[in-house]
Image (cartoon, rainbow, N blue to C red; front, side, top):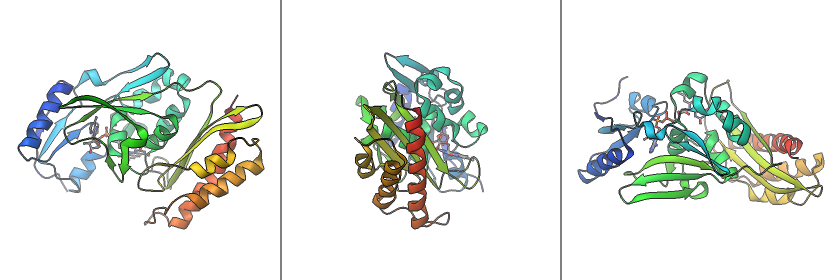
Length: 291
Ligand SMILES: Cc1cc2nc3c(=O)[nH]c(=O)nc-3n(C[C@H](O)[C@H](O)[C@H](O)COP(=O)(O)OP(=O)(O)OC[C@H]3O[C@@H](n4cnc5c(N)ncnc54)[C@H](O)[C@@H]3O)c2cc1C
């Protein structure tokens, strides 16, 4: 099947992209931003999405960068996931974000797919939204009223829905400093390498005076959007990093995860069990890395 007919614009700047989106909104036309097209193009071809206009931001060179800003790392929304995968800066300073990148699809998908696209698309099974929840990532958006910054906790609303307005372009992903000594892990279960995860877990924790501290656990592929598991986190905070304590937190993670998705890939119970297993593994791995 081929996409329904649409008008196509490829503005050279974010300002001109926003002006186009604002104009189409005024005219009552359904316009969509096109980035790497790795999710949107299949949706167009399957006619799941039928926008009247595409605003292609792929030629906006100003949105392609990875750089340090003080202790933070900032990534332009149109930066490819391949660039993130190949970035020594990310690998060295944000190892969890880097490891998550390697789990996304195949090299070919990462070659075209943008970093910003994975945030804006907000697939429930995507790795970046869960990583964003544990790393306190901030998203920068530009619209007719200027630039605003949105915390990850407010950005992901529900299934493929974000806080972005239809006239806004996501321009930047800001990853705050990764505190030295923080242990991290990301694990997922997928049917084949490169498939979206049936369930996954991202974790960070620190060790202070022999006990776990600042434990953060987020799941993906389990609910309509990535979620933190505060009860499991609280169960491990202040406790020794032992196999028994990890198992207790993991069991609580499995029990406390709210209404997992049940679909053709896996039942809700199966996903709950995956959360338990993956949280247990991630906590042990993260504790091993915490220094
Ligand atoms: C075979 C295959 C396997 C995959 N496996 C995974 C996986 O394991 N994990 C994973 O996370 N993803 C996976 N993906 C999806 C992939 O990561 C996409 O690249 C990503 O979801 C979207 O990025 P994109 O640049 O291609 O965006 P597009 O497909 O161009 O756009 C996706 C959506 O986001 C919006 N959008 C994109 N950028 C912006 C922006 N800057 N501002 C406002 N709106 C914007 C678009 O309007 C559209 O609604 C896979 C894709 C394929 C084809």
